[in-house]
Image 1 (cartoon, rainbow, N blue to C red):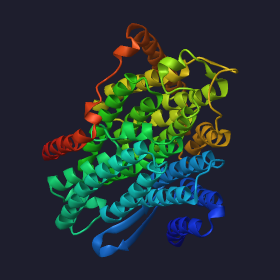
Image 2 (cartoon, rainbow, N blue to C red):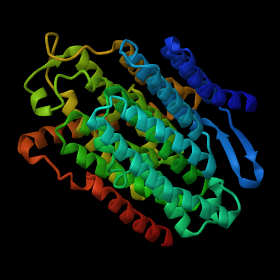
Image 3 (tube, rainbow, N blue to C red):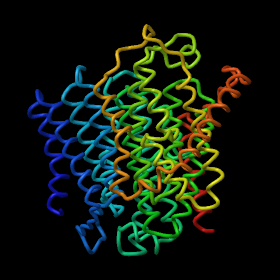
Image 4 (spheres, rainbow, N blue to C red):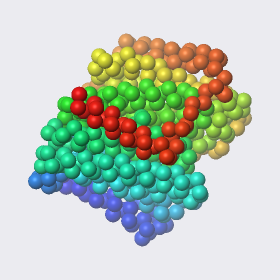
Amino acid sequence: MSTLTIAWLTLTFVVGFMIYLIPKLDRYLALLVVIISAGYSLQILTDQTSLTLNLLDNFGVTLVIDSLSGYFILTNALVTAAVILYCWQSHKTAFFYFQVVIAHGSLNAAFICADFISLYVALEVSGIAGFLLMAYPRTDRSIWVALRYLFISNIAMLFYLVGAVLVYQASHSFSFAGLDEAPPEAIALVFLGLLVKGGVFVSGLWLPLTHAESETPVSAFLSGAMVKAGIYPLVRCALMVEQVDPIVRGFGVGAALLGVVWALFEQDTKRILAWSTISQLGWILAAPAVGGVYALAHGVAKAALFLTAGALPSRSLSQLKLQPMKTPIWIALAIGSLSISGFPLLIGFGAKVLTLKSLLPWQVIVMNIAAVGTAMVYAKFIFLPHSQSGEGKPINGLAVILLLTAILAASGLYYHADLYDKVFTIENVIKALVIIGMGWLAQMIFSRTVQPSELQLPRIFEKFEHLVGVMSLILILLFWIVEI
């Protein structure tokens, strides 16, 4: 398995560079890499593989492959495959597919890192690839959004790198486990970098504009896979170091609730999905033990929603209420929305049940409120009008079908994890339906009592000049939390 892992990681980057040598095979080579990654992750999950590779013992450079890694790698594979299929008939050049493969490979590397220095390399490579994908259209708007992302990302990783050095100074190891001996300032700096990179509220205020203004397939890739590169190490650290678990859970609860509140007050469909991404990332952090399961459930559903949203006749909810969309578009929106809301028989149901059962007592009330809020947010899409003769752009069926199939079929993974009997019980089904029903009822009341013109929240903190200031405030907050 050790040799297979190294070969798998290396193959991704080798094939990525081959795309430039054989540009006529760019899509096929990119899809081949993703299929191999999917097969590798399924082997990990079905065989319950657990492997640790010590690359540099003296420095604590370590790779860990287990079910947590498997879920994140599978998420990356499914989302990337959908993006490639979505762009299959487009005029994307070999450069685009090269960046997709490099981003995919660097994310896979990040998902098996258990030390801060190799993770830093993986995050930087994925960040550069993400920047180039955002700037690919080469319009003034896309270049500005991409540069904004790159600037914030680089500042965050500078904080992170200083923190990683302090961890090594204290423990003589770059391993995540070194946080147990690290000074408070090291934990604060490392976590600030990861929270910003992962787009966790409020340090992730760069995310809504970036995801909303990127091209449709890039938005799907960013929300479905890219941001999880910053989430995975937080989850891994929480599982390895007991003292940081409350910090990770605390930011998870805050992001889950506040992300939903901002999504409720949005009228732009892509911004709603982007704010919801911040909330759903909070769900992953709120219960680290099952974070991989929730990452998979969110990744496939959110990618499907972004790809489908690209076919809507308008981004404005007010206009969508007046002009029915095509029924196939609505079906895709409804399935993705129901999954994230936790509807039974869909993968999101099992993920939400496991998360709620893994919460600490102080988290339960807030996370149940966030669950109702999530149902409210996605009721906006579910109750939009639709008809066979409705409006909308042609939808890329193969890409969306792949993700919707994953939403419907991925519950089978619970069998291999011996979780099926714990998830699919009458009590859990009833609770899920009650939460969704409460969310739908609350949304109906909310939409009838508040006019759309009154739903706009100020976006001042999303402005470029304020993002670094917010990061500084979060760093002060982290110092205070760690010192307690």
